[in-house]
Image (cartoon, rainbow, N blue to C red):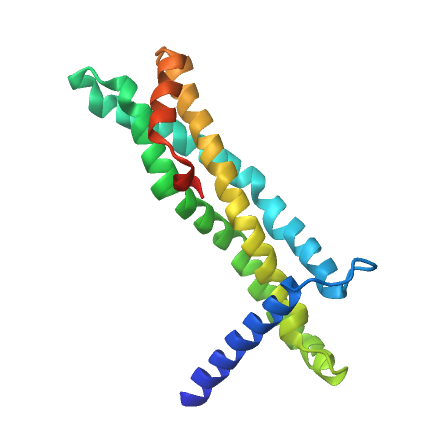
Length: 193
């Protein structure tokens, strides 16, 4: 049990060291294999999830507006639903939905890839060649997710607002200018960043 903990801590420290060394400035002449791997993983893990995140965010915005308008209708304050949308999507559900979708989509694939590599002896082959498996396998995925998750979260928040606008203005027939006025009052840059 203690050996596992120390091994896990050592893996985390090596991952952090490799990530910091990856982010350190390098000469721009040629990309390193790790940088090329980060680009490839960013394409697979980040850009591959855009459609799923976009569809989910539109639906979350639409459903949030419908629920808020339904709850506020007895008080005649349906248009204030834009504030609820801004608070709920930007501060609460946007980052959570993106994280859950990316983890659900990518974690099994990453685990399967590592298990297949371990079974085929590819990880041992990297060690035999004198290469650090953490640096070449784990760090590019971690760096790609560190870049992709905030970007996907910003996309999700914007598309949830579009979904809320569709629900409020197009479907429910409320004033678009008033919707965006309430949204602008409620949403600050610190909520998204």
